[in-house]
Image 1 (cartoon, helix red, strand yellow):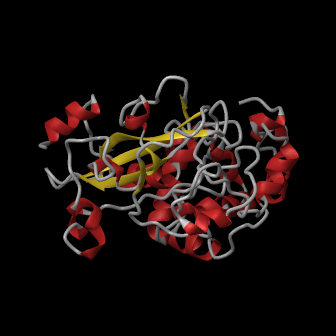
Image 2 (image 1 turned 120 degrees about the horizontal axis):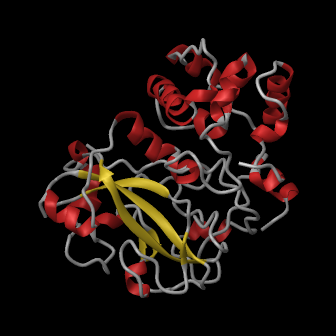
Length: 184
Length: 149
């Protein structure tokens, strides 16, 4: 892990030093290529997660197109209901499951919590998005849920940050989505 | 997929998570952990954060850390969340005459989020030592600084 000095300089205002999980692979988002530099240390302090609020009341407004196209059967597809704010490679396609890490990777102890609408019961559930880390990027089933997505200058609302803080390494492998609870 | 099917899928009973518990999960838990303890580089809330409520500087600091000040919660919910965090994770460290955050205080202080968090934190901690709230700065050290949890 990086030295304390680098950690301090990071959290003292250098929001720019964010690493993109797929830096070594083709990025699907043009602005990701502008995120240069490597994140050193695991300076999560300014990067607190904010949920992508999936409100049942909004489900049938324009905002909730993900839920309108979601399904509840196939967890290897990007429109699987839990992946409304997933951004990365699906662990289901990488030898793991929707909420379990593939062998050889470790779940990050940090992550962020969003919420998705289950289209079958119309209820909103809190979903914990945790990255699996310590193994080269899986590069299967890339998905990009953009519920409530904001550009990186609003880090609390950005799901491109590598959420491997506290894991054995910052190398991103895949993303999992575990059901935490009912948000209503 | 009725709720029990979701529960089977989740492998557990799916319980409602509401109000400040939900606000905490959505805005803080990812880094600070559901027990108020997380990784070395993130300060523990558990058995620690209550100390900050002892001094005016400390009270203000908790509102001005970027994760709090810049959160998407409105002033009222943010004040409720801060009070919930203090009472849930660090009740034993609160002053006996703890005055909960008001919506007004939060609204005022969050307008000045800290750009350099660690120097401000160090200063607050010095004040806590001077006021006799804690014995030494190490009490509120990060593990990564060689302190103990």
